[in-house]
Length: 210
Image 1 (cartoon, rainbow, N blue to C red):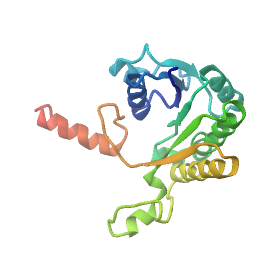
Image 2 (cartoon, rainbow, N blue to C red; image 1 turned 120 degrees about the horizontal axis):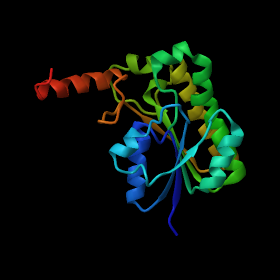
Image 3 (tube, rainbow, N blue to C red; image 1 turned 90 degrees about the vertical axis):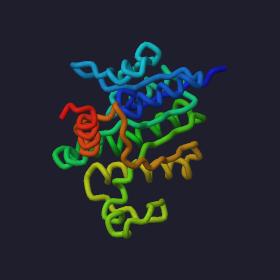
Image 4 (cartoon, one colour; image 1 turned 120 degrees about the vertical axis):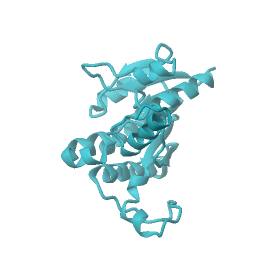
């Protein structure tokens, strides 16, 4: 029997690539997405998987919406990639950032505990959780042994998600793991990110377009 996976943030860079990867592995892939007035499926279309992913509109601030997504997908694996991931924007909307990036993780974990407790859960944490610690370690590689010192509402919300994932693993015996992601680029990354702006400009120069 084929495995099934539910991906939050499926319309983002990582979500689209993960969906494509899992489809190639023979998974039945469901993608939870935030309903917008303007559809944002171009990354899935770019990778040629738009018609292959079972899309489920879901509101991560609404527990019942998450429960419904899990009941529809009946996942073996849940990949939680959705977040308000812009550091600067998190200072402008700290409450919304804390809700969708932090508390939503608790909602998903609790929904898994109630609906599909055998499902495996992955939380996409971020190197931003290290914050000041990363600036003071002399350029050495970071690990979970280093001190977390978040410097933005986004980083603090992600750190909450990181710890609540560990708590659900140890307290409720749910298979729940963290992955700490550092900056990574691709043609699917939004130009609002500084590193993507730089890589895009370098590409334009190399092609004689700038």
